[in-house]
Amino acid sequence: MLGNFLIGLREGLEASLVVSILVAYLVTSGRRHLLPRIWTGVALALGTCVALTVGLGLQARQLTFETQEIIGGSLSIVAAGFVTWMIFWMASAARSMGAQLRGRVDATADGPAWGLVLVAVLAVGREGLETSLILWTNTRQATGTGAGQQTATPIVAALLGIGVAVLLGWLLYRGAISIDLTRFFTWTGALLVVVAAGVLAYGFHDLQEAGVLPGLYSYAFDVSGVISAGGWLGTLLKGVFNFSPQTTWLEAVVWVAYVAPVLALFLHRVRRSVPAPSH
Image 1 (cartoon, rainbow, N blue to C red):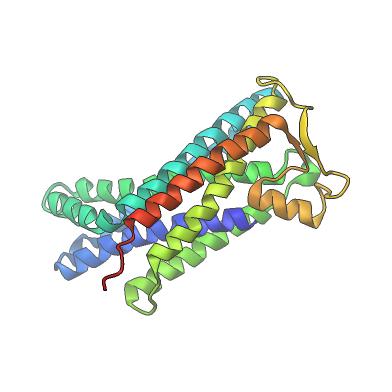
Image 2 (image 1 turned 90 degrees about the horizontal axis):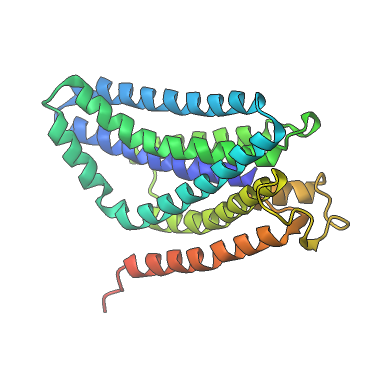
């Protein structure tokens, strides 16, 4: 699904840039012998993220339908909050990210071995934990809960996005390609606002299905006669925007109430951070 590919690509590229900065700084400062600590930290961070994703999936299988919906809906709302935070963090802190990481390396390079490992775990794990939570909720919604609805496509899309991100990060590190990262993160950030709105709205839908919130059968619109949920168009819209042919009033209100202010604030933040052209 395009939404999962986009999340995997963006978050994977952020993590790849972090690793590239750490590795490049150690190499250029003559500390190549400390690289194993960075790779150890990266491996620990990735292992923690995989364990979190698998743990969420296994735990969900042992719960009742109502409990699954409550947990899934709550995590969807938390995931939307993570997406919002990371979009604005990246828009404001991207320029100083390299200096911050180099400062942390200098502060810990001559200390105990675990210090540099911890820097790598925190730097990469923060991106990875966000990605795990977002992908788990997004994939759960995209695949459905019935055995006949389950598919590995969203997971494959996410892994493909992460793989492309790692390749891009390596090419950037080697100087083989040049990417306008400001423009890349601006476009993907705007798209992720729309993706997060779908995740947030579906989180509220889950809470409606669990009986926590009312209005499950009060529809703002019902286009199920035109767009089948199981057809290619319904599947595509579901995977990208979490669009439901039968959208409740609560979902519609939540979607609009999120997208309108967050997208406007994000675009305002991006325009303000871009320096005016000199004449």
